[in-house]
Image 1: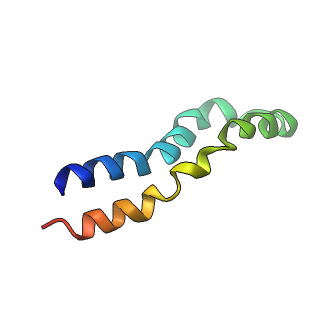
Image 2: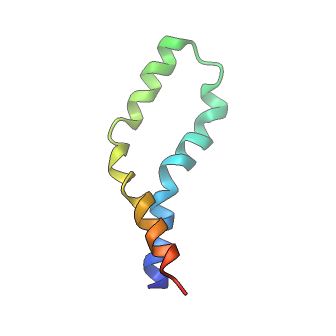
Length: 62
């Protein structure tokens, strides 16, 4: 159960960490270029379910 908790929590943190790491480079982009850069996150919805799964795994870990 602990392994599942670590894995799901790590997967849940992938998308927020990706946004955080590129923020410094994107902060000064013009609006049109920022819109283009946002397209790289288009298929990241796939990792969305890992957030509630991580919460359930953490809440069930003794």
